[in-house]
Amino acid sequence: MTDQSCYNLSFSQDVAYMQCKYSLYKRVINILSSIVMDEEVDFEVMDQAFKLLVERNDCLRIRFFKKRGELLQCFGDSGKNSKKVPVLSFATKEQQDAFIDKVRRKPIDYMHGVVIEPYFIHTYDNRYMVFFKICHLVADLYGINVLYMDLINVYHALKKGEPLPPAPESFEEIIKKDIEKNAKGNSAEKHLEYFTNLLTNNPEPFYAGIHGPNNPIWQKQLKKNRRGMPIFLVHNNTQTYRHKLDKDLVEKVLTYCQNAGCSPANLLFYASSLTLAKLNGNLENMMPIGLYNCRNYAQEKRCAGPKVQSAACYTKIDYTLSFEENLKAFSIAQTGLYRHVKFKDRDFEALMHNIYRSSPLMIYYSIAYSLIPVDMPEGVEFNLYTNGNCALPAYVIQVLNAKTKEIDMAYDVQTKITGEEDVSKFHTYYLNVLEQVLDDPGINVAEIQLSL
Image 1 (cartoon, rainbow, N blue to C red):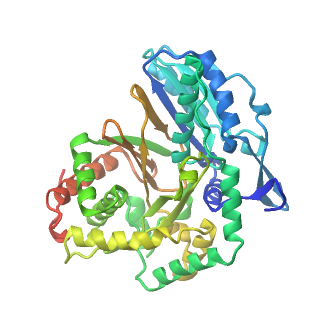
Image 2: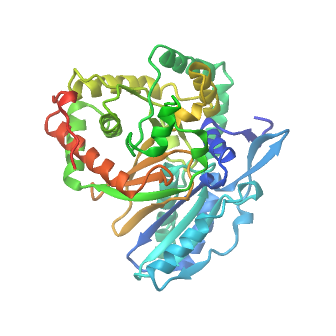
């Protein structure tokens, strides 16, 4: 902290800033999302609700500036966000998609006070949309969910003439607490020491992409004796392909997790790692990225700012053991991992480089995985959109709808190495693995089959 009102970036913000800083197109800083409502929306009242949203959520009033080359932040007032939200309408899906595509291609100008760009849309199919382009430095996916829920609750209160609901918690207060904790000693160094021991005491991990081992670019790297993807891939365009886990399968996942005392995120993550390992020739050591929601307290869970850390999950697969035995070992490791993700992402990059003597991006950035629970009201649909670029060859976002008990999966993949057919095949294999292990958790990992 530099003074009473200006702060360094949090560890969570540092991840997003690094990805933006080293991405050619600078669009990885954008998160694009929307809620679509069946019921008619009074956009005049919604405009009032949005102004109150900015007033009630201080993360939307963050202003960034540089001092001696370091990015700092302060919290302003809501006066600069008084512009009326544009209201648009589209006659066709093609027109609507073209507009969203145009919006996503422009980086959000967070260095000049723009951290959120809202649009109200009367959609081509006669529904009502609130669309946000938001800076990743002020909100993560969980935080965006908090913002939408606050907006909906404020809108309904204004419509009914009722008192406003309690406001979300202050992100500034949470940043203050984080800084105070980090100032009490070398906590970041201790957490990094945990990963140093983890990596040095295990074999070097292999890259495992959802495109499989026969991809020509990957084969070229193998011939050069490189096991990771080249760094230029962080500059590639991305495309999002959407798939689902249906209600019956999700119910099986939740029932198993309840009975086994396992988190759905761990089960889904490990099943994905196992699918990657099988697809890429029965690998034993991999390092996908887990994105961890670092909201441990009620105050943090009621806050819309960014509170997520990424860490490369060292995934071991023992083909002589059952799926359940492998999952238990993985879950124990994850518990330790979750306690030690409080460090700067760039420090982890340097650690990877020192241990493996190769570009950390080659190994570390292979595939990222996250599970986001969303609990929208009836008649409200939540959507995510690709920003067109990504610092990862693949990022798989699973959105669990608390009401329908379905999981929407967005595979955001770099188009240079992964196409629609690759994603479709991988998703089918993933369903194969999930169905086999949920029907028989005691199945030996070596016996699990991938089939289309």
